[in-house]
Length: 468
Image 1 (cartoon, rainbow, N blue to C red):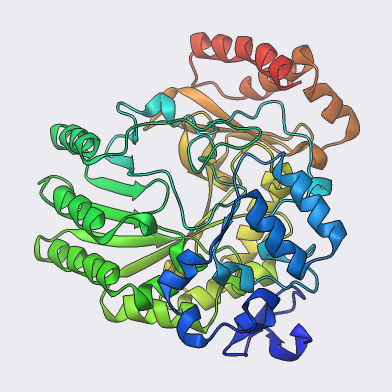
Image 2 (image 1 turned 90 degrees about the horizontal axis):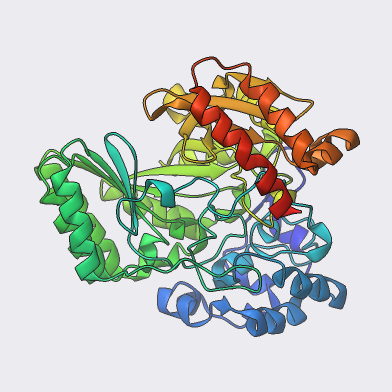
C-alpha cells in the first residue's frame, strides 16, 4: 500500500505527513491485522513493545531491506541507549523510506550515520551527579530541584541526556545504579522538606508514565504535603509515544487528575511536561488524549530537542508549534541538543538554533512561542541560547555564564565537529590545541575566577586524550 495515498502534506517540508487514515497502524506490516480496540489498549501496547536486540531484529526484517537491518544491528552495538519502542511510535515511521524518516532517526540508529564524538563531550553531559545531594535528586537551581523517581521509560530515545542512567546496560555503556524504593523516596522528600527554598520540583527519571497509579499517587500526595513546595511538574514523553495510556488506563489518568485537583485546592500547581519533536508523532489518537487532559483542567507543556534533519528547519518547527497549540499543549522549550555520546549526527551547531528562533518568533502568540535554550554542559543550567557571552563560529565554542547558579564559572558548549573546517576539527583532537581554543574563548569573559579557569583548562588535555 502506498503511504502517500493515505497521508496529506502539512507544510512545505516533504517529510511532514499527517495521516488521514484512522487505522494508520495497519500500514505497518506487523500490525496489519490489529484491530482498533487492541491498538487503543495501553496493555496491548506494553505487551507488544519491541524491546532489545533480537526483538528489533525480528521486527525490522518484516518492514525494511536487509541493508537497513544490517546497519541498524551494527548501530545498536555502538549506541549508548538500548532499543525500546511502542507499536504506536513504530507505526508512525514511514517504512517505505526509513532512512529519511524523522521518527526513525530519533529512535533507531544506523551505523553508517555515526559521526565522531566531540572530544569535550562527557557521559553525564550536564553534570547532574555533581549537583546531586542524594542519588536520584538533582539540586542545581536555588529554588528548583529534579527528582529522578525511576530509570525506565516507555521508549528509549537515542539522544537521551541521561544515557548515563536511563535504561539497561549496552555494549558501550554501563548505567549508573541507585536505589529507587519508597524508603529512598522518603529520604528525598525529607531533603526537600528541610530545604525551604525549594518551591518547584520536576518529577522525571526515567518517565512518569512508567510509575504505577499507586506510585504516582504516593509521590503526588507526599510532595503536596510539603508546605513550601508550590509547583510540581510530571515529566513524560508518553503522550508522544503511547497516547493510548491516557485513553485506556483510566486508573492512571484518574490518579493524575486527582493530584492536579488536590493541588489546586491547596493553591498549588501541578502540570505535565511532555516531549514532541516532530509533527509526524501526532495522530488522531494523540489529539484525543490531549483533549482528555485539557477537559480535566491539566496543564500540558512541551519540551522539544533541536535535532539535525528532524526539526531543524522552519517548516517543521512552525508546523509542530501550531499543532501543539491546536491540542492546547503549550510549546515551552526547544533545547539545543545536549552533548550526548554516540549521537553527534543528531546535533546542530548553535547558529542553527539562534537563526531558527529568529524566524519562529512572531508566527504565533508570545505565550505559545517556545524559548530556545541551551542546557549548559557541566551544570550551568538552562540559558536562552542567544544569550551567550561569546560565540566563535569558526572554533564552534560558545560561552555562557550563570550568575544565579554558579557565579564564578563559565560554561562552554561545542558545535559538532562536522560543522567545522577540517583544520579546526584536527585541532580539537590535539590536547594542546584544544586547550588553546578553550582558553581563547574563556579570555573573552571577565567574571570567572582564575582558580576555576586554570582548573578547567588543566582538565582539557586529559579529557581529549581520553576521548582519543
